[in-house]
Length: 194
Image 1: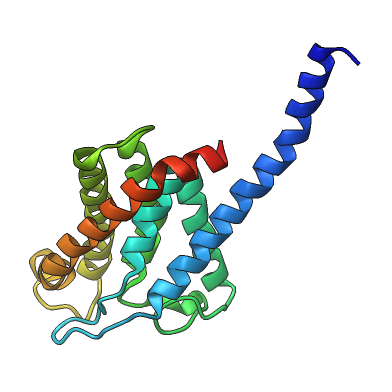
Image 2: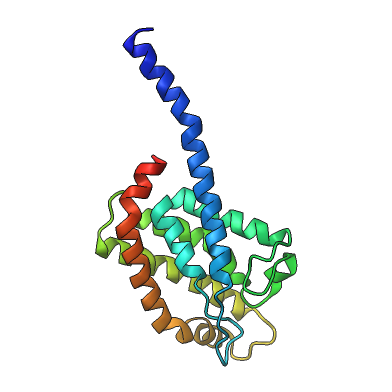
């Protein structure tokens, strides 16, 4: 076999391995999001608990890229929809009618946008902006869903207050944590996933 044929065979053999690594990474980030949901702290005055899910969502986009990050979050939502207890208080389709449904449904888009904003070789500013953009998407989803809830008095303004204000300090800390992890692991993960 000549050199060119060996290179072609190696390239074909590497494709399944790359596919398996990417699938494994997406599943791992779905599992990480589920684990982060279990770290839940109720916040007085809002039906939305403080969780570490946004950290997992943002890291999925920043480390895996927009498409694969969004795929990991769609997987997470799918696991919860079929009844696996991956959300903060359980699982099942009924969970998508609860007060946190808007946040959850925003996770794939938030991961995709964070990955897109961060691009190939992100620096501190780009990673921070990506985290901010992803959190913005999550909060817009949460506020939009809360604003149509019949039990909420005050409409959009009340929804904004419930969905954003109690989380501001925690969100800044989440962005800092995400930036440290993404900058520390980003290049290694991108090399591993091709």
